[in-house]
Amino acid sequence: MWVLFTRRLRMWLLASVALPVIGWLLGRIGTAIEQRRGSSRVSRTLVSAGDKVRRRR
Image: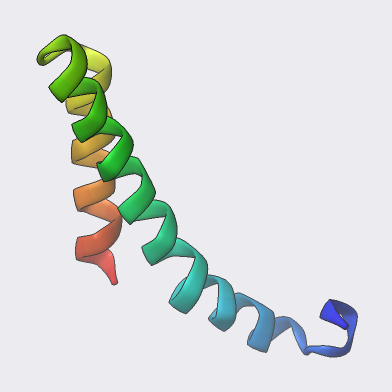
């Protein structure tokens, strides 16, 4: 079914659905790591990447 969509529609779907979900997921993973082990470079990077993806939307 994915093949039946035009390229432009597929890109729009990815940008409007997948990117916000990925941003939310990155933020949640970073927050979970911070809660369990404290702040680290990995957790700060995940949280900031999630914020950047959500801001671009």
